[in-house]
Length: 166
Length: 390
Ligand SMILES: Cc1ncc(COP(=O)(O)O)c(C=O)c1O
Image 1 (cartoon, rainbow over the protein chains, first blue to last red):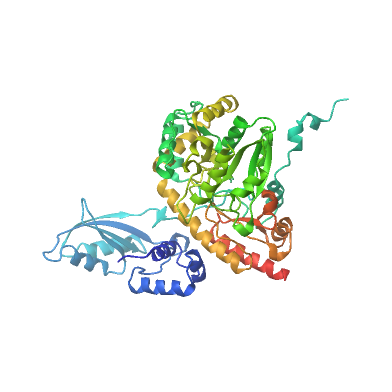
Image 2: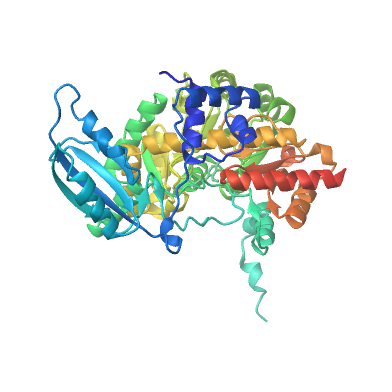
């Protein structure tokens, strides 16, 4: 679907900060609040805006540090449905955070979040590897998140400029 | 008895007024929790690809002088950039010079053309350096005062009113610091006719050319007949967010450029080498980053200027740079009083318009190169300040 220039601007702004007050959003794009509301509604209804999510640094929350694993999965595609069917079987598990179809050495890239390594291991051995079309899995645990979806964790973005300058 | 140390200072320098911005800086710097809208520079850090290119040049040991005019590769990139962006053609070998910021380019231009007593027209409100640089070059700055009611556009008859037999040159600045006003092609063509008629030279300070938000930008030397009469001054500070790198450039017809090069080779030798390597990367691959920054300024401009008008400070929509220049006439205060009280009572720093010349009185300069959160908070505080005045 083709977005107007204003719609594009709104999407770009919200992608960085979904909590921006609608009055501010309207001013930034030189629209009235009513016009902005209409645009937002359309973007939400057409699912261009899928969800307003928040990036949480769980490492900072005691008892919720958790582990994330990226799993390379090789599968046998099925006639007629290709990879879609097996992908769906995988992404329906709530512990699966993302599933991508990849080019290259393996087929699906699956991201799992669990409370512990044991929990992830359990999921891989019990749920994932046992699926009919899965040929093999390679699990990589994430040791540290530096940057996630464009956001740098622990960024000391202080303003280094002098207070008044010509 | 030895004479007082200060009597050693030259008469010209003794008479030079310190910048009015300085006083404000000292006051604001001594306070905690200040939201500063007084900063005349981008709030972006230079893009990583540029910083990385500079680091690489250091790792590879490129730490010696460059040619006086700057690295040829950089001049070639500048020539290509001016051609692609503004339709200007300058020869990298003889018509381009890499300088220590647009600041040094302005100084070189003035020193290269001014004879003692020559008059140079400065369009006010103006960047604080023009007048003093003219004086230091031995010239006499002559002010033209643009009008807030006319969105601070320069009108040709205003130039004619101050022209004298000693008038040598005119300094143009579009987009303007502090007003943000952009002169479009028609405005510039009208200026060009007067320039031609009176045989003037133009120093066109286009340091903010990358930062225009509404209409396509016209560079002054692109106006018919003006290339031979223009010293084009620009640089990397604003558009590429590279203020601390101290890198600019000047483009001019050969005879003028060679004159500037003569001064430059004795007074400066060359611009910093590592910064030149960063600048090559900025011109080669930086366009996308500049586009993103421009978009971000434009949104903040729209938000901030609309908000100023909403709280009762009348402000025209500036076409470029990152300054809003609202009128504070409703308060009945001078711009100094306004800025000082706003700083002390609400801890928001703005720059009094009067430091940019007499026609800046009654206005304040607010830079919107601050985060949206800061701008929102500043508006809140300014609104509170204004409501207390009633
Ligand atoms: C109009 C204008 N010209 C020139 C300059 C100086 O720029 P540079 O950092 O390239 O010396 C500035 C910086 O504030 C400016 O606003």
